[in-house]
Amino acid sequence: MNKIVFGLLALTIICTSCNDAGEVSEKKNKKVSSRNYSITKANSYSSLFIDSSRVESFIAEKKIPDSISRRIRSFYNTRNYQFAWFSDDGLTEQARGFWNLHNHYARTSGDTAFENKSLQKRMDRLISEEDLSPSASNKNYINTEIELTQQFIIHTLRAYQKDFVKRKEMERFIPYVKLDALKLADSLLNKKHKDDKYYEDVNPSYGLLKEKLAQYLDIAKKGGWTFIPKQKKILKKGSKSPVVFAIKKRLQFTDGFPANDSSDVFNDQLDSSVIKFQRRHGLDADGIVSESTIAEMDIPVEERIKQILINMDRMRWLPVEPEGRLILVNIPAFMLHVKEDGKNVFDMDVVVGKGGHDTRIFTGSLNQVVFSPYWNVPKSIVEKEILPAMAKDPDYLEKENMEIVKESETDSIPEIRQLPGEKNALGKVKFLFPNSFDIYFHDTPAKSLFKKDKRAFSHGCIRLREPKKMAKYLLQDQREWTDEKIEEAMNSGEEKFVKLKKPVPVIITYYTAWVEDDGELHFRGDIYGHDRKLVSKMFLK
Image (cartoon, rainbow, N blue to C red; front, top):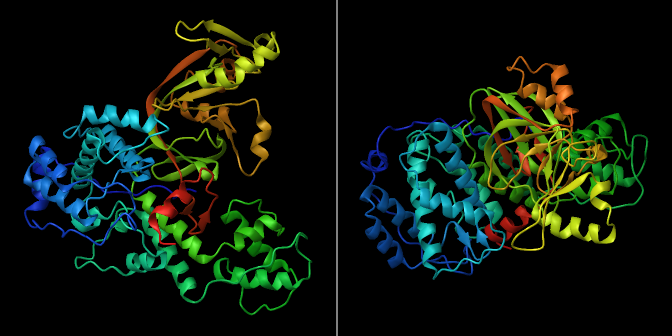
């Protein structure tokens, strides 16, 4: 998934105040979009609506300049004063995506002119909380909503080259009304700009996915692909069956199978096309057509178009690709990519959080390697797993090489850690990139998990298949850390922290559709249900 990620967004850091940043772009265009009264709770993206008077009061109280306040009014008029960043089930995915992008930009650009420490504290808390119940009458949610919009407008004016993200396009970055997926796709593909400047020009990953959207929309307009009957018997090279012919017809649409082959024999050419399809969908690429392969083939083209549109929306929140080293993880692909100056260096299989212990989407900076780490067991795991095990077996801690560090003064849950060693859940090395979710990379003694196609088994942290390779790569510029010394530190049994001379950016993403360096479109399963939630909010039934 090498090109998945990054919009190479050309930045222009305007060394002026926030107010001036808005004035520069507003001189030529002082228009405000008309209010869209056709949006109601029946067809809106979010179920929460804000009274327009509350927006005006906020603008007056905060003394927001006209250059920004006009855009705020225009932004909310477009969505009929529907919340952009909250729905009744909490923060929207776009809120999380924007805040990650905002923090990444502030951290890497040094542009602190619009820093908002109060909002930062609130967002840290909101993002960490699992069960939110936002209310359209709650002043705290209203203020946070409008402040996020203000930050979004200023960020967009400062971070993108002029005219590549226009005012009306900015207003539509956050979905606001349920639409027919095919009509939305057609609109995105056929919208023309007079100046011939388009968002995909500064976000290649978005542009590549847009090209694939055109291909799939064309397939949909022609009626889509045919349904393949499910069967328990597997098909492979040499098989003969009417189903084989149906598979050939299906793969003519997306995987290069020639249209002139009408036989029902599973031949070499079909074997190659099946393997290509399986690779693109994260299946075991063995050329054997089982129920799982047929199930992927039978997903209608309309559903694939929705999946592409959802991931195009996610790609709007891609940070600028940094020069030098970068580590990227795509959760649904169970894969980590190490890049240098935009080029892939190596890939690595990973294990991510299981359902209920989701690995979070965020950006950070890897700054420390920890050899022979202790595992400080999270309080939730102590309560739900360790204490019940201790109740059944008084020798449990000793058997698992664990110890009580401190008895709690406020409740019955003690602090427990696991000592370095062969049984340690973090293995022999971990990699720290400070974040509010307490997520990090680490080794694992459970190596067998890497043999599975779908690798969601952890409590949220990310397990690496080749942790020693990662340690050697990160410490290659610190010459004292030879292969022998790294091996020794990993097996010493004594915890040792090593600070990197130059932190490495880390980006954790969630893409279920993307285009690889070779131009192939890939799909993956929606392991946390994020796509499913967006489908219900973005598209008409």
